[in-house]
Image (cartoon, rainbow, N blue to C red; front, side, top):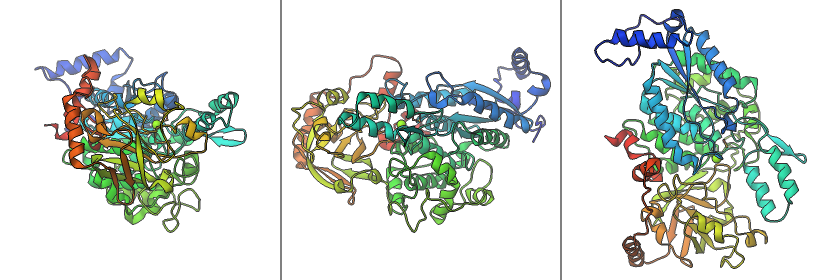
Length: 573
Ligand code: FES
Ligand code: MG
């Protein structure tokens, strides 16, 4: 590697100069200014690797960012190139009002434009918390500069009264116990001290873990980089390696990420029992690649032949640190073998198969099951259709009560998230254990950014009698760390006049997972009459007066296309 001042393509500080007639003057100015930061000509006359800093006081998941950046820079400099860090938006799940998903597209735009704005030969994307990796991949694909993904790594587990705990499946489990009166306020406070014991992303198979693993499967993150814990030495070695690899990273993501890469990503998503959010994110990421037409049906089709192999919460029992000790993603990729396209390209310029061959051997372990003994034979995520979701809906069947896989029940309808909050625990709520809970107006348009409110809590009075799972339907999302018979991402959403908008209390709804159907038992003319009335009454979402909320309302596409903005997709032209 080393100095690269003699290549034909403009590189280093010369890249992307604005040509207003005097490029040499523009370069002179660029150099003069950055010298104010103390750089020598020797430093500046090299390949430049941009390093995106998404650290923030509001993002505890990214609290190890300073150490990661230092290690990435070391890797870049070991190869004789110059690392230059720059910030973009950072998003944390608990500190991103109204929802982190609302801001994902904004972060993708920031990422895209800041990569484009400055000279860099390649860029290291450092992200981790749920929406950050999808946003960075979306932005980097559109910016079309060679890019490599580094994740901050998962947090380790804590301990509560001798039981291992971690964010955030256990957050929900313990909170449900508290709601049901099984544990008291003092104990829930103690649990709160142990759920997030370190920096890093949620330690179960939530969205962050899922997207980290998917980045490896896509070939845009180094092999073996998803699982090392955020606070360990291996995480920093991965960062150093990422910096090294970035200097040899010659092709933009749109050339690395093909249909084969995305099919590999979906295969992995199914095999890990990954987050339902990853479906929306992968559709959005693929939507940025020119000529790549990924649809919901690809997820269902691939899912039917891929077994659930990784035993992590919420579908299984373990944590990311266990997956790491079991060899991580390479172990899983080897087990999946012929279900993958091993000839898919990666950022290293080698195929996934060649990378796997060069990776240290796997060994006996009990987190990644052999295909002969899977946790479930197939389809951890399924795509449902029917008159209630003409454009599709998603369900994580690996994390639901098997008894509800074929279920018919009467709808109990909540108008929106506020209505849900006001009435779900009302002792007078007319609800039974076999009811179907329906939540409207939390789709992309309905409630800015499709909040993770699709995980409708079991009404308190039923929870107290031991009811653990019910069929729940909405146009929103659910945290990847949650579980249950929860039908999500119903498209089109209620706020744009999807059939979900006109479900009424007492309507019969039938879920049939085997048949992949979700049906509102209503004569077709009655359904149409209700939809016509809905239009006449103008019950859609009011247009926000100004700002990003207005842009979001006007431009967001439905969940079956990844909830990106229409003008950001590759097919926008
Ligand atoms: Fe950041 Fe869970 S809150 S990954
Ligand atoms: Mg989450």
